[in-house]
Amino acid sequence: DEAGLEALCDASDVEEDTPVRAELRGEAYAVFLVEGRFYVTQDLCTHGPGSLSEGFVEGSEIECPFHQGKFDIRTGAPAAAPCTEPLRTWPAQVVDGKVCIDPAKGRRAA
Ligand code: FES
Image (cartoon, rainbow, N blue to C red; front, side):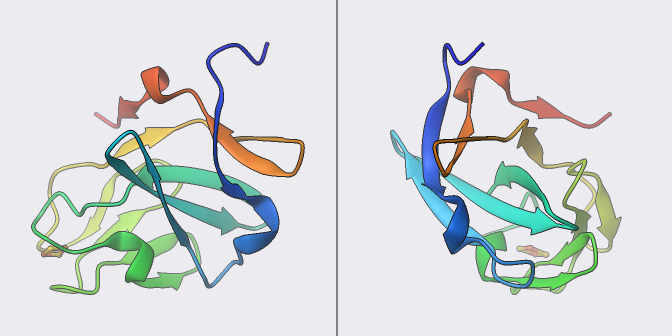
């Protein structure tokens, strides 16, 4: 069911060590590729002004470029201080070569 899906970026633009920032109606998202699967989180760090798409990917974690806190890309869960609040994440799907999400289906790890 593709109802509600909206394209964020070309799948071919996302590399394992190079996340992509995408905007949809004023919301900023970070698109990641981990072990061949796409993941989408909010781009803004929950700790401060860091843009996670400009951070450093280490395996399945993203290190925020601002204070070097970390999150699990797959779940949005905080993985290293000073990050304590989980990120919102969206299930990602590739349709016609584009990474797509349903913006209404964001969730936040417990
Ligand atoms: Fe991301 Fe502080 S803004 S760790």
